[in-house]
Length: 180
Image 1 (cartoon, helix red, strand yellow):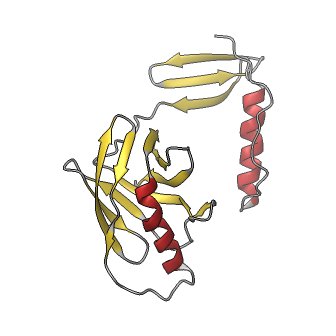
Image 2: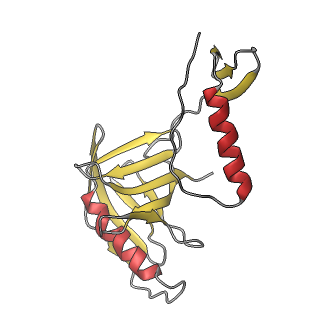
């Protein structure tokens, strides 16, 4: 049950509010202080060299592709870049057992079909409604990029409550979290 975690790396992105950065620093310091771990049922505790529990983790059953309402957090812009979904805009995905996928692309609804074989996924080009949303600025460009990139998804993975769609080369198409 001994555990050593070397210095953890992280991105250099600053987050708001400042308390988020303080929480991250405390979490990374707690990881680096790890000396032992214990597992009790679906809970794992990490303790420092003094035996003080510094972190506790709870196992979470991964969400399923089907039957989960997925909300996008990141999307591929189609210009070899991935960015966050615009604030105040919701992009969703719902996969049904009969091979249908639908949701909101931010302004318009979309619908398509998909097939899955293991972790391989194939998404057909979606059809969308034809509403024009002038606000917020850039919403239509975001929506076009999201809908255009979906058929390039070749694999999917689910870790906890995060779904990622990626190209065959590993480029991120979209990242979603399970709606609560």
